[in-house]
Structures are given as structure tokens and as C-alpha cells.
Length: 319
Image (cartoon, rainbow, N blue to C red; front, top):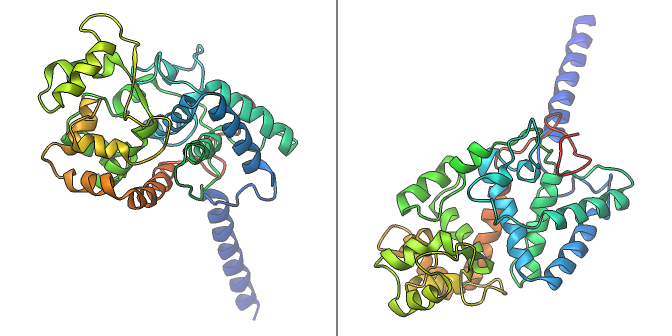
């Protein structure tokens, strides 16, 4: 009997430990329901105000989440400022002079700490929710954001340079890059659709408009006014003609060879992704549904959970 009781206690402890481990190490949409019930409405209010003040801010916040997840997972590492111990991802080639929205993240963090009574909401989760709320604020779909990510204590400019997809990538390189992050060809096409609210610097599309043949001649000519052969590297162009609105116009542009970036037009250039691009160009409902699913999938890339990482007091530096 004593042996049976000992076994029962052992099994109960094992099951409890397993359940507790799962509960504290997985992401959940209701992660902050008890510790900060007003968290999501607080973030939404700040994001809506920021996007109303400057529509481009929506694209900036979405981009921060993308670039964060593609380095070492969705861990808020992109937010860390340079320091003697931090080789900031802000200085990586895909981010330097282009990554924006850090002040809005600071504003969200301050508002959350006040609403929650103490720092309980991670900076990594702020990026995930702000990305969703930015898309919604610009007329796009919503989705349930899974929460519980913790913040990294490191950053890597080298990893950012190596892992964030480059604007000169061909289709094969894009597929490989996304596959390396656990994402498939469909995710590649769908998430690229986030460029519908994006802008690009002249330096990132100059080669495409002057040297590529798979671009509408008249469209290329228009872009050359914005982006001369020499100089004007920081001049900006929208990635589709309705950049202030989240819609499927990005895909329509690709079908008509009006992709601003070389990597964008590669998605519709006689390859394996053509059919999906064409479908989204006339079926915005399918794009919205699939975008939401792929954003959830991307948000699950190697999050820090449980006792890993920390909850930063300031999103720009390690505690």
C-alpha cells in the first residue's frame, strides 16, 4: 500500500510538473489577462494615435516585428540600443537609416507599465501586438496574437545582416531564407504582402529599375525621377500605389510588373509562386485570411519563454 501511495504521489507530481512547464513555456492569447487585463486596449490606443498622426508608422511597426523575428526569433532584440556589450541590430544594413517606430514602442511601454502597475508586458510582445494593431488601423485583417514572449539579453548585427531577406534576393534565395525560419513558400508570398503599406529607399531598388528587364517600362521611368543613378539613396517610394491602406494592390502591381524591389517582382516572374500572387491579386479575402495565419506562424519563431530571457524595464537596454 505504501508503495502504491508513493507511486501515486510520484505520478501526480510528474503530471503537475509537466502541465506547469507547458503552461509557463508556451504562448497564449490570454497570457496577460490576470496580470494586466487592460494591456491590449492600451497598446491599441497608442498605435491608433501614432498611425493617425503618421500613416507610415503602421508600416514601420509591422516591419520591426518582421525584422525582429527573422534574426534570432521574436525576442525584441531589434529594440536594443548599441552599448559596449550590445552590437545593435539597429546598425545592420537592413535597418540602419530605415528602421523606425522605436519612439512609439517606448510610448507603448510607458503606457503599459502605468496600466499594469509594474513592468509585466515584454517588449517582444509589444512588437507582436503593435504589428497586428497597425495592420488593423490601416484597414487590414485582425488575428489573435499569442503572448508570453520574453525579451532577449543580447543582439547581433551580424545575424541581422545574414538573416533578414535582402531586396536583391532571387526567388530561390527567398524560399531558402524563409525555410530556414520554418516558413514555407505560401508564407513567403503572404508575408511579402505586408509591403502593401511599405516604402523603400532608392538604394534598395536602384539596380532593379535601371538594370532589370522584368519591370514595366513606364513604371521604371516614374521611379527614376525619385531615384537617380547617382545620389538620392534615402529618397523614398511606396511599394504599391495604395501604401496608406492595407489591401491586395501589392499583388496586382506584381502581376503588371510594377514591383518596386527586385525581390518583390521575383514572386511573379515565371516561378513557383506566380499562381499564388495572381490569386491574391483578385481575392483580397483569401489574402487577409492567409496573412493572419502566417503572422501567427511567424510570431512563433523561437520565442523566449518560461525562465529564459527577461522582461525589460526599458525596451532599449538590458536590465
